[in-house]
Length: 128
Image (cartoon, rainbow, N blue to C red; front, side, top):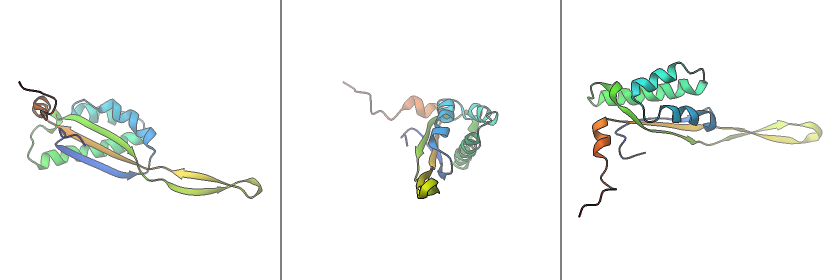
């Protein structure tokens, strides 16, 4: 995860393909946490419910560490990575079998305060 993201949450081995998760993660990246929750709440997708839970968990992690105004945090890191595939065989005609891949994904969300983003990690700046 990014070094800027201070409050994180992950959902590993989510039983959904990463291709269905990534477009919604792109939609919330860079927005305030409250706005991202509102966007996800009105999406009809199954992956929106999973991302919503991870985002709520990241917000709760920030609140547990003593942050007030959790909704003012920014979604700086929203990633969907492919997880392991469970392989199944589907019987076909004439004794053949086709492979069915049950795909999983890892959903990770990182939040940061606006002041932390402005400070950055200082790796890109060169002083003379």
